[in-house]
Image 1 (cartoon, rainbow, N blue to C red):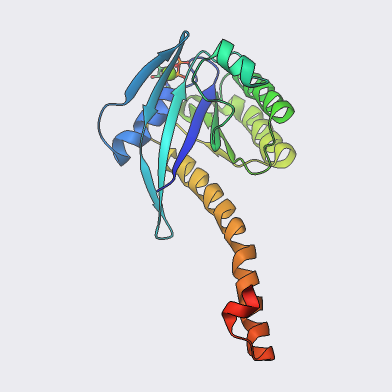
Image 2 (image 1 turned 180 degrees about the vertical axis):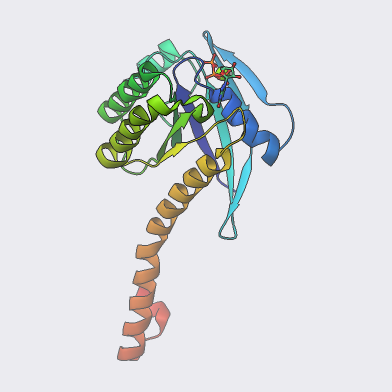
Amino acid sequence: MEVIRVVVIGAPQVGKSTLVKQFVQSAAPGRPACSLSDGCPRHTYFPAVLLNSRLFAFRLHDVSGVRRFPAGADQEWSQCRALGLRSAAAYLLVFDLTCADSFRYIRAIREQMLESRDMQRVPVIVVGNKRDRVAARDTRDCRDFSATVRKQWKWPYVECSAKFNYRVLQVFRELTMALDALRQEELAPATETSAAAARSAADGGLCGHCAIQ
Ligand SMILES: Nc1nc2c(ncn2[C@@H]2O[C@H](COP(=O)(O)OP(=O)(O)OP(=O)(O)O)[C@@H](O)[C@H]2O)c(=O)[nH]1
Ligand SMILES: [Mg+2]
């Protein structure tokens, strides 16, 4: 089975590890594999998610100390060796809803990603964490974050509280749904071609095998 590599990125202390641990401990209790790559700590987890009767096996990297998204393979190797940031199948970009700087951090990471990698078929879920700390006076900021991500960036957006396990599942549901949608898109042309071939075979008296060839 294909293992889907997902990298979790965000400014320091936004709650990346808390988010991942909350999810993984409910999905697959146990200790993570842990490695250190040139000062960038990385924890790796292997949860699985069942969606629409399909199993999605993840390799989840919780990384910290990422200052910028590497522009090329050389930078990836020299700055954050073996983190595999550029080749992930999907990303969770986490920020702290009470810290505008942490939103600016993911905005910069997004720009660096778009400059250096074709992101057309790479799902990114933006996670506004620490919802429990959002005071009434901050709700306008939250609306701005949400509007920017959903309307301008056109990426899925979830607000959660990792500490209190509030909407953590929703984050991973969005991720799995985005990957599932991609998979469906990849399957669709093949299915349509086979159906069309079968129809034309029936019309023209050919067997399906000849028609497809
Ligand atoms: N109030 C509140 N605190 C949180 C939440 N999520 C995480 N924290 C706290 O924020 C602090 C940082 O959490 P971590 O999960 O270690 O953050 P991190 O992004 O992994 O940090 P680094 O790996 O050092 O970059 C800890 O004290 C957590 O308890 C949350 O949803 N609400
Ligand atoms: Mg951490």
